[in-house]
Length: 342
Image 1 (cartoon, rainbow, N blue to C red):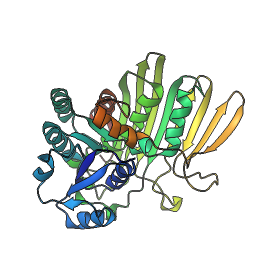
Image 2: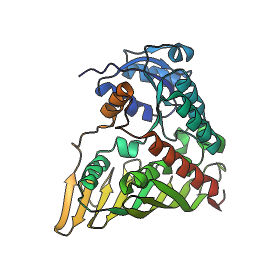
Image 3: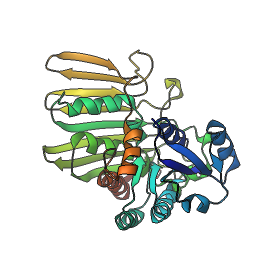
């Protein structure tokens, strides 16, 4: 069923914008305009989404009162300032991770969001666009493994340095490895443990094997502790740019949930034990071992987001959850012990 939501895109600097745009269109929203100064990015995007108009000035989008929300995957450190502009123009903002690269920008985001009442939400694709993770959320909500008291989130990636733009290697622009990649795993920690408050216990970052790019952090890890209505929880996160080329996919992303009545392990993108495809879930409880192929699990976020835009509700993601993830990632980055050549 078509949605009344009309949206635009500003910034095409990460390919995650394709998944974000596709999800909203499939949920019934209409893409009406695109702004990106780079021809090499705009041309293929418009070929994929031919119904949208390319505009030369973002103000044509910001000042168009018929547009409800703006999507963005601009350069990392440009996302928060853009989101502030969007909110001040009366529109909601859905942005690729990381949605903010400094604690100072986060404080301003919180203030402007309170003042405007607009949404500033982040597309945490490793949960929102990943079917096995969505299925795990359904199982945990149904009580399949009891209360989740510990999570292990692993986010290894291919570096493929030759394909990366120059800004990717500049610390001030990409924000650091924990600000960027680890935001996914910290989002999942808060989501699955239902922690309403959390703190960083320890964190590390380092440049282990990329001396040609001294500002790159190719490794990071975090120990986090949280507390919610049901009790305390801890989590461990490891992210890096060391996925071997022989794996065949961009990274062996995994999530393990330890519950009071069982465990769930996700092999999100590949099962190196031999099963083909992605979206593998393993559940172990008091009755036995269960394997689930989650490749057909529906992804509800986009439809929920569109309803929230119209109804001003928070079914897709709460604003406080979004900002709490940002604060954890930025705090972990700021406090990290530096290893290797960093």
